[in-house]
Length: 232
Figure (cartoon, rainbow, N blue to C red):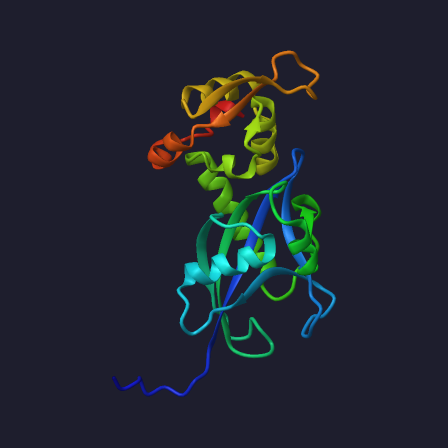
């Protein structure tokens, strides 16, 4: 089949805002660039779309190269396409945000990419339009976390209700009412009591739960207003 008659070269990049949670703070996975332009400055992790790759395939490739993990939860946010956004060459960037368990990734893979986990509240200035990308991704994360239980993607396999609450407080950067939060979370019927307790907790009621993955997958889009204003 004859190709379209168009001589302009436009690159397609994929930039990934990777969120993680270390038990205390929401973090970003950022890379110190070791090449020009903006060598030595902070950047999101990304790469270029190959000619025979679908967008999701390329994003999975980039995330696997960075973290050593597969089947990561990610969502496409939007495309950034200002003419001069990249000083080297005309480049469109398709932006994704991803959620990973910060304790499960391949730390050697992260180090090999010259990447580091940075507290979201201490985010350094990023290159190009990456600051805008992070702001858009954080807004999307907060919106989705309020409607659907995506926060579980950031937790270890077993966790306590207080740990889960601390995660959502980190996402929204605001305290949540303990009783309302616990009641709302348990009423969703997504958690399975493991019968174990967190030995490192200072409270005797630190029951360890795990996510009912079957219910999570089957009813993911059914939990509207997962985090409501009454919980704040």
